[in-house]
Length: 413
Image 1 (cartoon, rainbow, N blue to C red):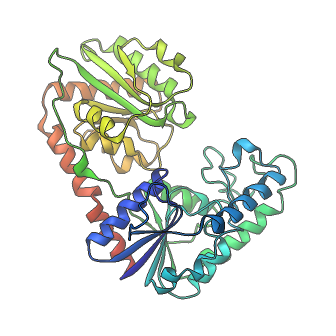
Image 2 (tube, rainbow, N blue to C red):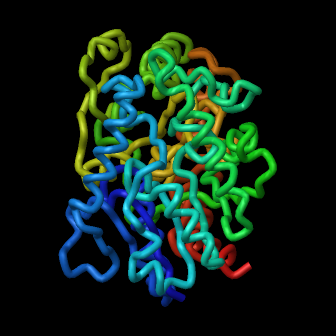
Image 3 (cartoon, one colour):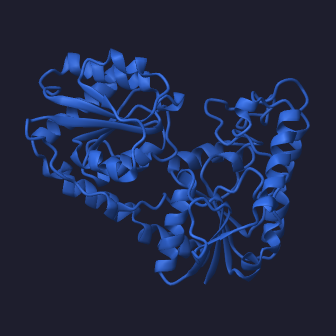
């Protein structure tokens, strides 16, 4: 089967990385899968799995879309948080897409795939899978609505907090109407990467009557292997990782509060525990409040990050929500016990008391208690939470081979 996977980026950002993993897994199963991309990144020119479009061909619609948003009242700070889908590359005429038996749309926003081009691809009748790497299909323009629920109620994204004044008022209902028309096509299959994301999408007026299948991201489990969890001098580590530790969604202050509560309320469990922070951080003042010994590594290479995970006893997430929770998967694959809030996609990865611990309420005290349970379990060497068991759990559910087979099953349905 010839399968075209559309992605704005070849290797920049989480959506592009997991799309490449899926593409490679499909090829390993004997399918002729190829990524069609706007930004080739570090892709080798002779890589048969990635086909870049012309740089100028994409640059023009990209700049036109950004310019229109700015002229309609979106600040420069927010220009990349919204997309209109009004402009794009004529991908419906791309030679490989014309040949393909099926098309899989991944994160293809910001002037790459337009709604009009999507409509023309759907008109061919070939199966099309749209994997939602964010909630843009469910909203008028924004990729991540966060705490904004206007897309769920009768306001239908009006007024949009990303627009200043009334210049963008007509753009919102026009885009919603176009999306509603296109997403009604029976050739379009929507995929959410977590049950939480599916629930959020169905809560919106735009997709409330759509069938949405849940298929998680493919994960390179074999790259993550457990190692010794206790250092020669008896230390255990807890790791928190993010691309940006100061992203408000990651809620670093809540993590510090929880770790401080853990140190204060559970001194026996906190004995000899150190914390490893990984990720960009403009101001590390927040970390200075921590009562436990810690190191901030900044951004690390994948190899260095995997090494940290391999020696960690626990991986902690204080995020307000996660579409899926990649760092929890990474930690578990390396044998670290996951500790997290369970407000969103984390529950697709962690089952409380079975393969990790979920704080029942969103408070530092609750997260600290969950961390104490993880450390007690590790010190007791509970076989249900052994590094090998956690690694095998992730391998069984999220390996690229398993995920690719689920996508093929959906395409052939």
